[in-house]
Image (cartoon, rainbow, N blue to C red; front, side):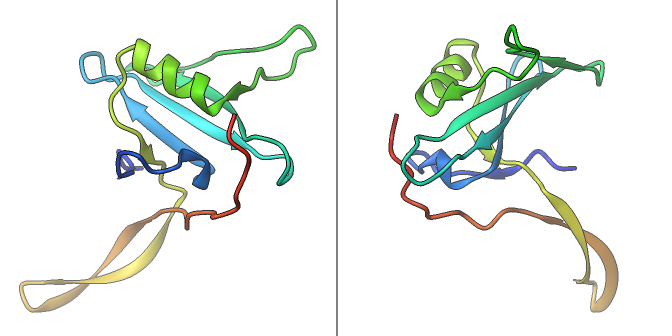
Length: 124
């Protein structure tokens, strides 16, 4: 998996189902997953933070044992306050492809990213 594909500043993050940002000092990766109910409900997010030990630490379990969800603005504010960097699309898979190297085509796995979802979800 890659470090993700950059999302331009000011882009509506709700267009992407999986996003991430990295803490520049510690290398922790915050990975967020979009929870979209319907077109009348603002998008909510769940997230986890991956540490350098490759272990996951889940954040935000509620009393019912389900995942806590957060508004887009709360997610952005948390990441900013905690010192995480710019948002990036998370890689969603890989595809086989051919790349041209020194005049020869070579097979290579190529990162696959999401197509933006332009559904006009209400803002929180």
